[in-house]
Length: 101
Image 1 (tube, one colour):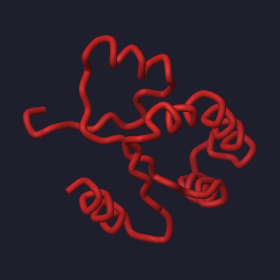
Image 2 (cartoon, helix red, strand yellow):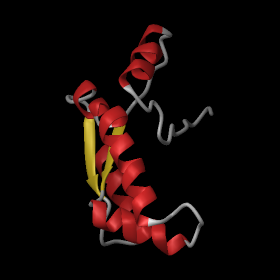
Image 3 (cartoon, rainbow, N blue to C red):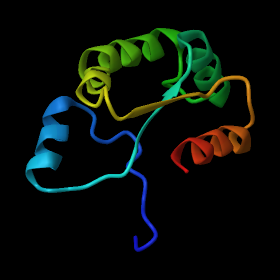
């Protein structure tokens, strides 16, 4: 991890973020990939997994709204929002790199 690492989906809630702070775990960026609910459902159902049905995905999104979205307020002055719809993964990665330079 000498060149850095990515916490993907962590912290998942404000309590975990506060614990990171208490433990002195530092970070450089807080990146929020902005994707519409319709696009999330489209992408996940396209994977073809048993649990990627729209009704299950909507339940997962409800959990996100309740438990994880409050992190955007917690990190409000640090969040870098990246529109992650309508492009190839390489294009989204380039947007992120551009924002953190």
